[in-house]
Image (tube, rainbow, N blue to C red; front, top):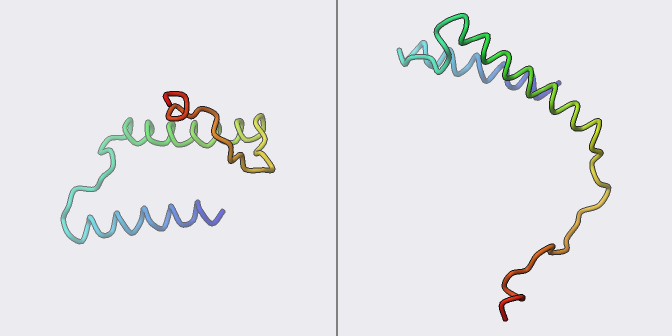
Length: 74
């Protein structure tokens, strides 16, 4: 929840800074462009939640090298 609020606050700050300095806003100017950004964001969130449900995070950190090309050349 904190990340979403931080993202919204950052978006508003960037928008206000662009408006104050008369720099074109880094956002799509048409409704279809805005909907495309919303669709990509929504698909990212849905995919992230599905992957995190299907593939559990490991309880350990693997520190072994799976492939060491330098050792095989010697």
